[in-house]
Length: 316
Image (tube, rainbow, N blue to C red; front, side):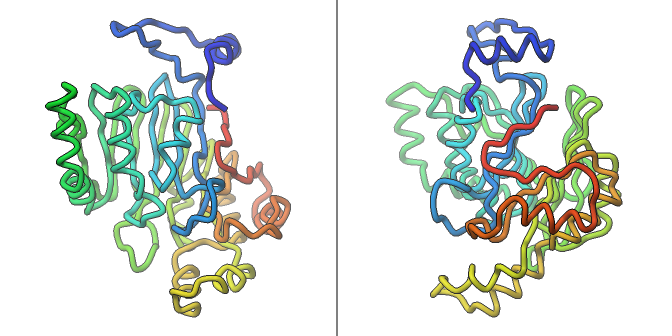
């Protein structure tokens, strides 16, 4: 749901928000109330349609957007979530699998083409610098032509890259972000994120096998956004992939994703107030209804469970 002016005014009254005008005429808080948005909930890189899209998430806090992962389609989903691309500010990448970073370069470019004039800070594991630099190189002719012909600023100077390790990642204006290395073989630089937003805590598992230390990392989270795999459905998923070895791909998937009962165990140990299921593997099996996912996780977690879907919005 896009945040139209009318919807925002109504939400402002409900959440106690106010608007202010900046020098350029933008409303400082015109992105709507503080919220968590699941932009894309597909696990894996295969594209079978627009919904569900690969991994991307959004936090809006005090009028500032924080994008977590940028799988293919993140650009369009961000617009649908009510965030003009020119308002892009912070991006965090959990790891360098394509279903989490393939739209990073295009997202930055599209923001620039849509009027971005201020800085964007991008945080990611080792490899982020090359990922962005090679994207700039592949589009250098277009970028430099538009700078000269259209008078645009240099997008390459607007984007600031930050490679991180486990530990503190970001701190500014009552927002802190920390990272925990998780289990995602063969990818060694894969992380979960803990966002502390004033009094609210949102934790993203990233892609991971069952990893008990994640429970301590996610302690007392208001939202634990956790990936999930349903092993009984994997054979059907793999049957339509002619360019892979089904046994190898199945073993790979099971090595770095978390089964529903183990997701529940993490949420229980973390005392998570709400568990949000995300990054579904498989994502297209019509037999895997929300009730199937709920029942599978409910065996080990008795708290509130939300079965994610693209563009689902949750208040902060």
